[in-house]
Amino acid sequence: MLAIAIVAISGALVLYTVGVWGEKLSGGLKPHWLAFFWLGLVLDTAGTTAMGRIAGGEFRLDLHGVTGLLAIVLMGAHALWATVVLLRRDERAARGFHRLSIAVWALWLVPYLSGVLLGSGAIG
Image (cartoon, rainbow, N blue to C red; front, side, top):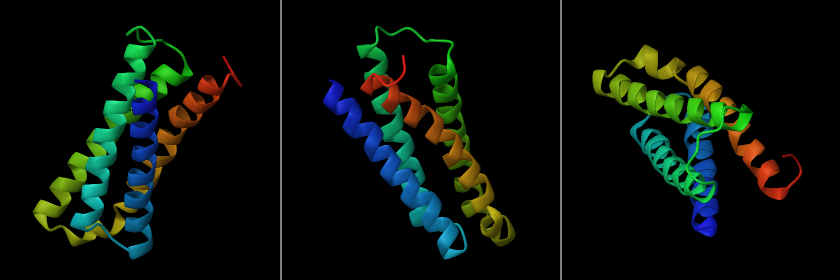
């Protein structure tokens, strides 16, 4: 199960990074970037669920646990808001959407990197 969790969370990193930075570099929100956001969220949720089962299923009130929960909630809100912006065809909101994307992505890196460090034994 550990290998599945690692692949899922690493896949989330790749997909979400491609979506966020693709959107930023292309100058606006497009449907294909939205697909990367949703796929990244799905993989992150699957990987986090698997890691949680490995860890005994208990939520930990620590940096990794709190930022991990916050990151998944924000990724979901981000993907949902991106969907709304595209459905409304709000070009102004779509052009400026990258500021939100980068903020959520940067926050998402905290639990990702703390998980890597915890898993490697570098912190703990």
